[in-house]
Image 1 (cartoon, one colour):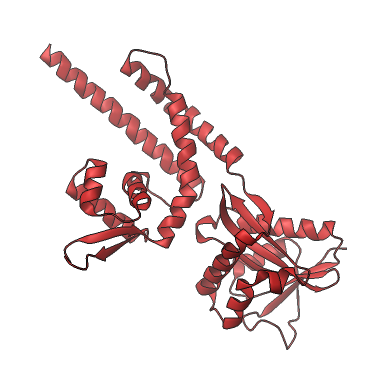
Image 2 (cartoon, one colour):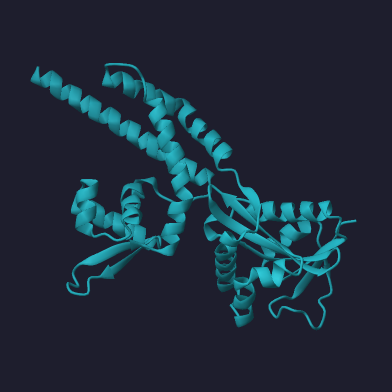
Length: 314
């Protein structure tokens, strides 16, 4: 009986590992499909670090019920990805406090709704009425192999995490500022006037008759764009910025489509924009939607711009 029991334990252990490996592989494919660069094997440590806000190696070892080397290796991977910071203890330099970086926090916010859907779906696929653990494993493994489970997850993500475009409200002012400052720091530089305008969207954009729109998914603001009034029926498309974590999801194009549709509904005669030729992908998108290059005036309002584009709407 001991031999039979041992063989059974080996078989069960192998089955569970196979199920785990398959689930991890399919989760990685899901992340790739969603344009998210994340290793599912890092999830337990990353989740605990962000939820705790500050933690240590020993606390992670206790929480994850794993070994010191395994935790150390995971921490190194998270640090290399720029998702966590390690801060030496002010008293004992051998100890380090682990905390999420702003990049880590943003990624966590991006992943959280996907994790919730994945968790909910896995629970539903494991609610088999049976007294046998092996029957549960068989049922769940079949759902993985057939692709049914992940297809359900993808359909729910599509339905529940659809990007929606919202108009400006005061609670979104910080997102407008942060997204644009990040974009400027990445591609150019931030001037004092940039901070002035971005910190007062009501005064500089909305009160003169302009509009601001936001791309939001699962409560997370992924991007923003403004339509600044130049004169009656002529508006400048400006202040477009997309979160680094959301780039590649078509957020900019959704904002562009919304602005053009909105302008046509308002019967505006044209949209114009200023850009820089180093932003090749952006200019390609502008041309795709019908913007044509026109001469930049000598007294252009933007030192950074070296290309001006115009889209007639009538």
